Image (cartoon, rainbow, N blue to C red; front, top):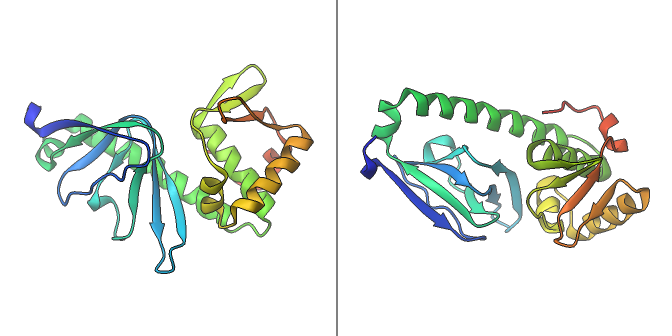
Length: 198
């Protein structure tokens, strides 16, 4: 692959990833959050992209969707020509697109739950599966999620998430470590929710 067709860029936490009509981004390090804004200013989180995931204009029909670096991240910019000429890159793109589809389906299933508590527990289980690192009987989410991030994902307020976190901590299956990472004890009560596991 021509080096001119593969360009690496670093983005700081909070930076929006620019979109190009032809080129496509691939996450090399870090995590991106996909989100949209309503005309009223409400934020909706649509998912996350981790190492290996792709992002570009051709992957969405909505102009208002943006990818933002949740942590300091490094991305590779591939040209359309490079993608067309690389079967291995095409295979990666297909696999990552299927993963994104599964994540989107899960988030839609979560949105259909009536109780906010069930939505939050189910979201934590999804993050545990996708971004968790097992440490003995505890799974630590590798990235920090604020109460606002979680609230935007399940359609509630930051205050509600904070209240529910206190309840979950009292129940003994959720903790926050010194670096503000979420810790989940294995087999929390929420595992019994009727949602598919990724």
